[in-house]
Length: 323
Image (cartoon, rainbow, N blue to C red; front, side, top):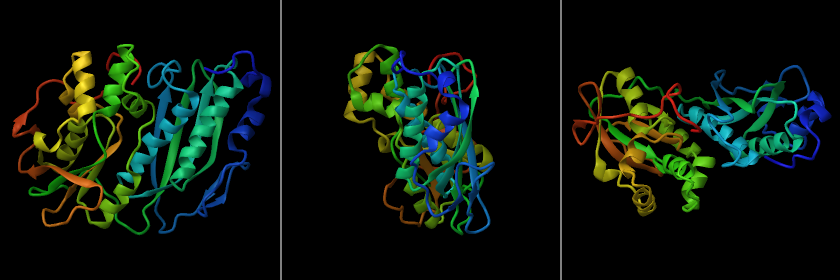
């Protein structure tokens, strides 16, 4: 993971390790009281806060022979920040819980913390606090706070028949990277990096809310699976049009080399953290959004008018390794 001969977390101690994690980090104006106290104080401009939390567990969600500790930290921010972005909120603050064995090199925690801090600052947020505990493997648990800035939150439950279904970002790239890692293939560095560190279109969530989108979601478990959440919550059918989602040349080439179907990645691959939303048919889509389908009367998700057989996406308690 890092220099095994350097000092460990046990050598450094809990509170010095926490101090190292937050030292020198910039805070946005919304942080009124930052790290170093029993709790942080964060401004909530309109009296509401969008909140989400997620975990990354070593061996299940990441592997240090595939990702650097800094990349793990950045990934933790991406998967949490995308959740509040899908609600139409702007991420403002992150709380971080780290668990690790006592013999973990302190350099590993330093790098995870650096990745978290850098990624948070890049989107205008701050790391305002957290905790460090002993665990059997490295665990990164992140909670994000988001500012709705006076807008109504985007929910999964308000899609309407006739809506345009649109996507911001791309799908299938993280799944392709995971498949390449699993096959021991180190070509296609952009696909490998898409799995190591997703790049959510954070601003697209705010733009969707400003354009009065009816419903939205983060694509974390797969396009069909996550659109299925909207369909179920809204009591509608969502039809995806394949010709609006053609896999790019890089995905197709990687699929040929691995003997895979690129459509499996595009339709069911998770962890790209693109955003999907449903807009009124007469609304001009904001910049960065493109149409991929239509909301219809009915139930479920179809592709070109037909149900898709097989898995719809990731399931947390399915068999398998790092995802």
